[in-house]
Image 1 (cartoon, rainbow, N blue to C red):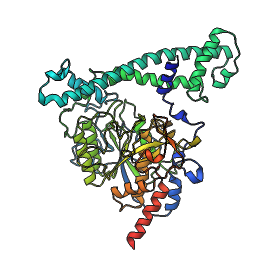
Image 2: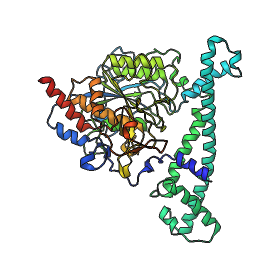
Image 3: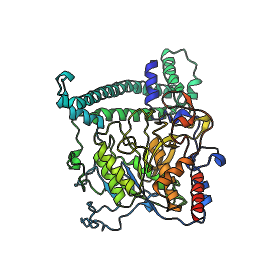
Image 4: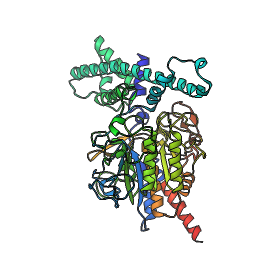
Length: 537
């Protein structure tokens, strides 16, 4: 039973959120460490400093799962392609994309259907190489194929390991869910209460064997999660993990599932232009992730509804390229190029994967962005790994140049309660992660005018992109390289030691990233202002 409970603690979606007692203010990521006693990025303090100053519109492209551009707190800040005439079926601006009014959907079909779920890149590589190398040994492989065969062996090992682990977890969680639901119903009847809490269980004194068995099971679970949550909430989060694992088995690891039949493109033609459709919302699919990310950057400030995003003079260019599964290199590269060609100054990329068979094509797109002066902000990933060693693509460790000056890799920080400043899930890397930003319990937009909490480096990246947009809005002469330099040099350090994710080891915060700090908008705008004054002198 102990092994099973450890599995629950690992799998529950809320495990990282439960790392701190209580909950932060809903807008904590915009608050100030000194004034508000939470480790936010000092957005409001920065705007107080900038009050009365002129600003320019900044276009931020969000490459993601789709965006609810009709959301009440977002629709006023959505980028519109003024060179395109809506609905006429003509590529008016001759950019290769017909009726791309708000952006483009690279994972949609010409008939209006959309890709929702997709396979992992690992699965696709396993399938590609399986028929070529299955049953062969290094002794039977020609010399010219030895390198690819070694790659196949690693792919085979990783696929079988992760697929088997996912299948086993799904089976175990199914059994655990049945037990939890059974005992929850038992205690609802026993206590005549329709909502069971940890405190309720502590009041029970019974000699009944079944009652005591149930108390033991549920108490053990509570010891490893958040004791403030009701049993119904625990069941909800468990069901989310069950759904994720079932989706992995049915879609992500499936060798027969082929979404490119929907898209209708040639997967081997990497430079193909114009495939997809203009449905940036991604109707019929889950666009929560992209909507939440966009809200963090640009939810309309001071409009009296919802939340305040980080950036106050920004437009969101919606680009859909990330399914529920792994994004494809072709789509990522073409999405970057689309954003650059259509005027984006910042590109937010809250996605990543462990395999990237066409890395060079993505690299060429990133180099293209660099040549055009576009800043790229990328989420470091949520595997609690050191990405100095582990793979998380795309990254700035490949290609001709490394540690690109226009690329920011972002880890997820927490608000600081009980001395916890790092998301327990966040990837890190003293050489690979540039900076941290708020990514735990982030309250932002959901589809259909909803607002919800979410967490991940996916949330930390848009916080960073929002601060970068603030800098470019008020200091438009800054280059992408200067923006990154400012953000790195003004990142706020943490004096006490922090827990290194996935290890339990206490380390200095500077061991987790290049800057050794957390994004701070107030310090960033002050530095940018000082640079402006010096340049005038």
